[in-house]
Image 1 (tube, rainbow, N blue to C red):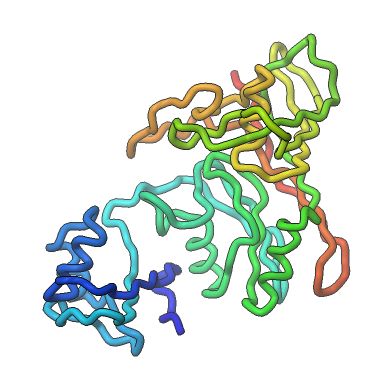
Image 2: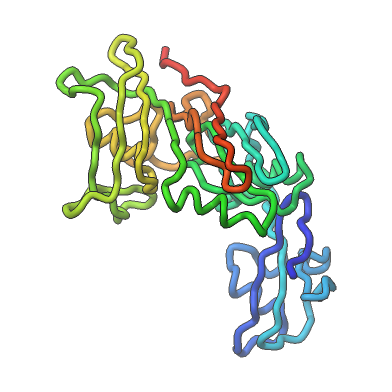
Length: 298
């Protein structure tokens, strides 16, 4: 059984493999070199590495292959995301959150506390909260979470089985020669470039319905209805059509990652606007809509 969360962050699990290490700290330092040995010693002294019984493991604890340990991940200088999420709905099984731009859904990279999952765990006091699906850090809008582990697969299965109707909105350039509405299909695969997806020959594995809602100068506000859920599908499809979404730093050209001094003035103009599905427990049709609005560039 996993140990309890600390400040909304769950413990990660590691099984010690056979090897030449004398002490646990020697292995941990080699396995996770991004953290110095001195920092690992300090964390162990603070009780951030524990055994199955919840007992803190000392830095000089002898190494024993097969031992199961848990450790709590934290970042000493995590960037603050200056935007707040809201909870639109909660019952015994579900939480529906409205995520701001720039906030990751789950811990990764340089973000742990500043993620939607950890914020909601702290705010709602629900350690079992688990996302049913993901949206990009740069995308705003609806994210659904399950509460109870026994029913988790029922809800996550809705997305696997494409039984969820998802609607997005985006602001992007107009194309006078493109008849809308249209359905765009292509084969998306991982690109050699970090983070990007690229189109490839072969049978399509991604499909998006694109409709124009309104126009303003050279830009349009589009309704995007993904039939499939490939990574970066909407961003890649719009860029492939010569209509990259305003504020996109990945498509059509991958821009350098911003450092700690991130510019929050120009968010990606992509919003997970609405979601609709039949609840597998109650049988009711549930529909939710984001309260956020996209911004026309000035």
